[in-house]
Length: 385
Ligand code: SAH
Image (cartoon, rainbow, N blue to C red; front, side):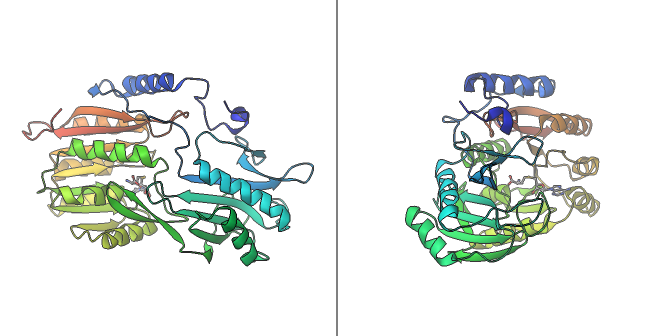
C-alpha cells in the first residue's frame, strides 16, 4: 500500500488489515490492563486514512540535484521522498508538493544540514478539520525569502484555500523543526478549529492532538465516564492548551487545569477568554507538586481528569490524589504500560477501576490511547456502566 513503508518506519501495522490492527491493540490493552477491570471493545475509525491534521515535510536534493520533500529515513537524517502518505491530510500533502514544484521556478535552494548553506528546511501544514482553515509554515535557514510576494501569490493562486502563510526562522544546527522567530507573510499566524464545541486557536508551535476525529471520541468518552452533574469541583491535570478543561467546563461548577508548559498555559487562558468560559482557571507547574500543595491546604476535588505524557504520572501526584480524595478519577493515557504502573498505585490508595475504553487514535501505527474510570472504594456515586 505504501512504497516507502520500510524506509519511513511510521506505519508498523501496514501489513495488517484495519480489523486485525484493532484486534492486536485490544489484545495488548487486555494483557496489560485486563487484571484491573473490564476492557470495552476498542473504538476504531470509520475511515482510518488521512487523519493527521498536521503534516510535515523535510526538503532536500537528491543525487541528481532535484528538489525532494519527504521524511527522514528511520533512525537517520537521510531524506526519503514521499509522494503520497496514507495518514496525512490529503489537501496538506498537495500543498507541500506544490511548494516543491514552485521552488524550481523561484530558484529557492534547499538547506544543507551539514554546511548550513541554502534556505528551505521544512514545510509544515496545519489544517482545522472543522474550520477548514489552513496554515503553511515555511521553515527557513535565514529570514529572507527572495520574491516573497510573488511566491505567496503563486501559491495562493494554486491553493486559494490557504488562510495563513508564515516564515519560521530556524538557523540553528538542530533536529528541532521549528525555530523561535516567526514572520507573517499572509493572513493571521494561527488557525482556529473547533473541538467538543469549543473554539481553539492553534499557532505553528502549539500542541494540538493530531487526529481530531478520534480526539472528539476520546474526550466524549472521558466526559461520559466522569458523569458530571454540574456541581462538581474538577481538576484537569496535564491539561495542555486546556482542551479537556474547556470541554468539561459547562458540565461542572468549577475547573482548574494544571500544566507544566508555560506557553500551553497561556494558550489555555486565551482559549477560555475567547470562548467566554468563566468557571475555569489554569495554573502553571508540575502536576504532582501542585496537587501536593493543594492537598496540604485541605482543598478537595470531586473529580480529577489526568492525561499525563507517555512517561505516565508521578508517585507524588498519586499520593496527593489520595489526600484530596476525589470520588472519581478519569485517567486518559497514550501509553498503557505506564498506565498499568499508575493504576497499581491508585488501587493501593483506595481506588477501584470501573471500566477501561481503548480508542484508536493512530491507525496503522502500534500506539493505543486508553480512557479509564476509577472510583473511590465505598463511594455511592459511580457512573452508569
Ligand atoms: N490534555 C491535553 C494534553 C495532554 S499531553 C490534550 O489532550 O491536549 C500531556 C501534557 O502534559 C503536555 O501538555 C505536557 O506539557 C504536560 N506535562 C508533562 N509533564 C508534566 C508535569 N510534570 N506536570 C504538568 N504537566 C506536564
